[in-house]
Image (cartoon, rainbow, N blue to C red; front, side, top):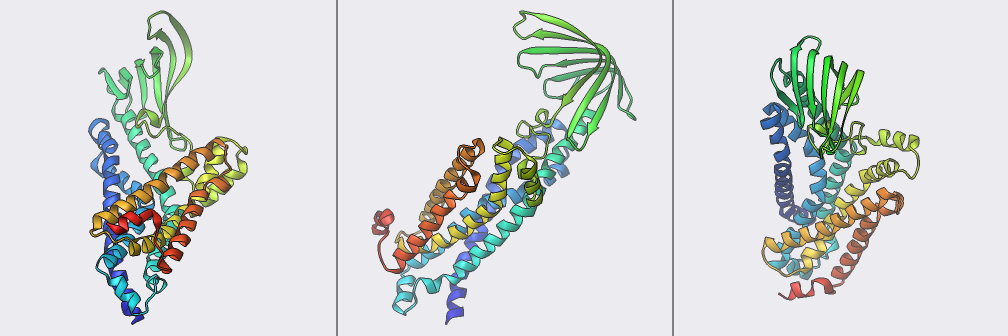
Length: 379
């Protein structure tokens, strides 16, 4: 009887879990595809590179969607059982709410382990690989976007005219460059020669000019000045390719646990970087914990609400997830500033989830109403 019951409840849960996770990942990927398609259309990226970038984004998106998918799957399953009076029939047969929980605990544990592994290994790999791919596109644009005796703009607001370009060693001769990236002034560079230097470690491209002049004209045309130089470096960072990717150093979201611990040990305490690394370290465990708790919260909620239809379960699940996500993001921002210690702040939303889970299980197992959802239950 026990295994049959567990299999019956689990069969109600897992299809919704997979569908919810797939739909969430698809929707979030679709929103991110806009910037990636821009790279393909306007930046010369290949379709294979676009596919790889989408693949690199998947681990982070799955971790983001897992709490909502777990909550939605459990809540919708128990909502359907409650609406069809199957939970009442089970209780009349002597089966308590706690005896219905093993399939829920199993799914929540699967989500917990999946989120833990993805957060520890796949998410840093994906974030790092994504930025590396963008850098490869930038390097390709520097190599292929500059043409001899043709005005070209391989990077936003940076126009080139080169009399001669060596394809072998990337040396340019008789160079004319207009750099309009500065919001206050336009820099026009005229140089005898220059070369393209690529630094894969810092993910930066440097255009080094020799023996030339810079004409600096303010955008207001109020003043202008001339600067002569022997050597001048023009830096092209990832922010010139994609505005969302401005950092040249490894971001905290790209670090594994060992790298975060090492970075925390070497960073100056109370700085924003120090706080960010601590936040990302605690997120490795706190987000999987949220997945587990969301699954447990879904069972008593679904068992108590009398509304019919999956739309009610989806709506309630999204409302709870949005409330959690907003509170978690808000606390994260506060912790970054140092106003609240990350050791305390990151766990506050999850403590609330734990207390809500215990409260709901206790109330529903004792057949007591949940006042928050009283109107919904009576509808």
